[in-house]
Structure formats: structure tokens, C-alpha cells
Length: 491
Image (tube, rainbow, N blue to C red; front, side, top):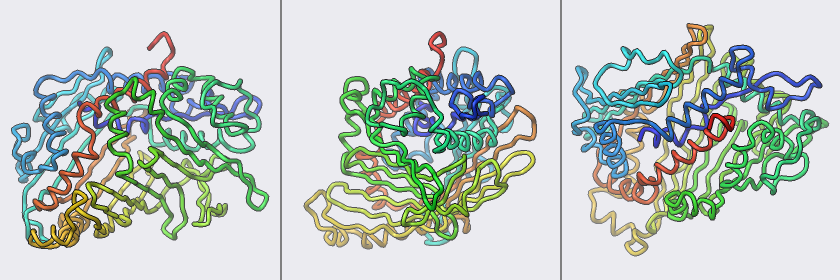
């Protein structure tokens, strides 16, 4: 069940990079040394892939833990914070919160997840890669902004990452950019793999090189994902660079055969949702952008790079070489994350506007920290006819305030409530002990308890939030993705 949560973000835990080959070519199979320990980087990669595969496919839960996660999913799908707050799985604490605490242990033959009521800080299980503790807490109170009922929600978590330091993650990003550097691509000489046939020419060389090391994993991904575009080799003012212009979409016949619930979900949300996320410098240059468009089931991702460095670009798409940077070389960096969305649901069209979060990165001698704080959430623009029949002004006439005013109250509390802290998240990489890195996460928000907003979010959840069977298939898909990375004898 916990695998359902991690299924969405599982890919982010796999990190690899390393030295160039003897002829100066930077290849994927040389790219694991940064994980360490020296000479054992590839084994470290297999260790992480094995853990993620078992967590997503074979996690062992007792009856109480399974019931909690089922109840959690139902409450979130119904956006019923009151039911979740009163659930017997949560217990009271001294500061007015009701909390549920669960722990995960990565054992040699299985992953075990248990719900209990111990403080995560006393957990003794951080001795193994992937062991974790999570506390989810809710507090019912009056919002100081609107003098209305609301829920303060927070998550405190920690996970043992061992040799997977923040530096290894940064080196992976720099290293994989080095693989797709124009001069490096010209030197890659792996045999052509019979995968991703839509990608041709020089652009497919990194794919062929990756296939050489991980053939089963590449074939698995090719079976289910069409890679419509990958990279473009560009030049500006005589300087060559690579533009990653990734476009991919699910191969629906393969999902229909092997993941029926996930295929049905793709059909259910077709044309309903569009999402965009951009990372920008504080003075407005683009670092990277990604987009999801359910009208075509497509995912897009773009950034510019050369020599292992990210190159910010202006809104015209032109690279600004004077601002390029390597993640392994910076000690601090500030940027904005700008998210927007559009929803067309039951005849009502919602444009979220651009929500802005400030991200601060700081490196220290004993680790690093990422601070994210939401600084602006605009009031959504709502148009159309409810269920395709009822005009919104008639809906407004039946409730105490108009829909956009209710939405404004909700996002105002989310952005500015909680004693001015609003909504935010902090990720801290504690590397005070060699080869014993621990990642700690804290997140908090405040949610206005408004039944009309709750009804709207409930309708949204029924259409867009995946049901339990779909979430299980998402977990199974990514679990198999990681498992196919392992050598054949280990799968």
C-alpha cells in the first residue's frame, strides 16, 4: 500500500555517474563510481534498484497497516479531512495534533511496513538502505486569516540513504548531461539497439549506450512508452550544446494487455487535465520545464546542456551561456518553481493560474538542505456549466458565496495560513557520518474546511485521483522497471 505513494516518485531515487572511458568517451557503463564506495558503484546501483523493486512489488503489511492505507486513500479521494482526523489509526499528541506513525524496514529477503505509535526519531532501523519512518499529523483549529474551521497538516519523515549522498545525486545529473554532450555523443559507438525506433541519427546514440548496460530495462520501457522525441544537437554563436526536448506517451495497446486498470485510467482522464511546471532563476531565465497533456497522453521535458552543465535559456529559447552551472560546483542556489494547471471536469473549466514556490538550496560540510515555500497561489478562474447543464451563476445562487470567492478563501489560507508560514517543505541531507547519509523531510500546509470546496475537490478526486487498483498497477509498473535493471540472474 505504501508502494502506491512511492510509485509516483520512485524514479527519482536512482542515481549514477562516473568517469570517462579510456578514449575520453563518457559512457553510461562508467557512470556509477560517484555513488561509491570506490569500485563498488555498480553494485550500489543494483542495491538501490533491488530495494525499490521489492518495496513496490513485495512490501509486507500487517492487517492494521493495510487497513490504514486503504482508509487513507479513501479519505484523500473523498477529500474528507474530518473523517481522517477522527480515524482510530491516529492518536492524540501533547501539542494538539492527532498522528499516525509508520516505519519501513529493508530486510534481506523482504520490505516490512508497520503502523505503530512510536516516535520516528527512536527508530533503530536506519541501519539499512531504504529504512524509513513517517509521521502524518492533523490538527483541527480556527484559521487566523478567515476565522473559519481548518486543518493544519504536516508530515515528518526520514530515510536511510547510506552511500547515496546529495553529492552523488548532483554528480548523476552532471554526469548524465555529460553523456549527451554534443562532442561526447560524436564519440559514442554502441551497436544500434532495436528499441525506440522513432529516435534516429546521432540522437539515439545515448539510448544505444544505455541499452548496452541495461538491455532488459530498456526493452521493458520501450514496450510501454513511445519516445517521440529525445534530444536535438544545436549551436548558438558557434557554441554547440544539446537541447533535451523529450516527448513521450504510453503505448496504449501494451497497457491495455498488461495493465488494464492503468489503461482505463488513461482513457478516463483523457482531455481532463493539463499540468505545467517550470524552474526559473530569480531574474526570469528558464532552467527546465515539463508538461503533462492528457489530450494526447503526452509528457514533455526540456532543458539545455553542454559539458555536464545546465544552460538557462530565455523565453525565446536562446541559451544564456554566461549563466550555465554545474550542480556539483554550486554551494547555494535560489530559484522559483512555477506550476499551473487546467481542468475540464463535468463541464466546468478551471484555470489555476501560476502558483509560485521559492526554492533555496544550500550545501554544508555535513550535507545539504532544500527549502521550498509557496509564495503565491492565485485564485482559480472557473467557467462553464456544471455537469454540462447548470450555469455557474445558478450554482452561485444556491451557496452562501460565489465559487471563485470560496476558491480564493481556500488558496489564501493555504498560501498564508499557519501563522504566516503558509505551505512549504524542507529536505535535509544529513551526511555527518561517512557512508551513512539520512534524508529528512518536513512538509506543512493549512486546509480550510469548507464543505462546498470539499464537494468540488471530491468530484475532482473521483475523476482524476487513481483508484486503489490503478495505484497498485502504477506501483507494479515501476517495480518491474527497477527489477529489470538487475542482472538476469538476480531478477
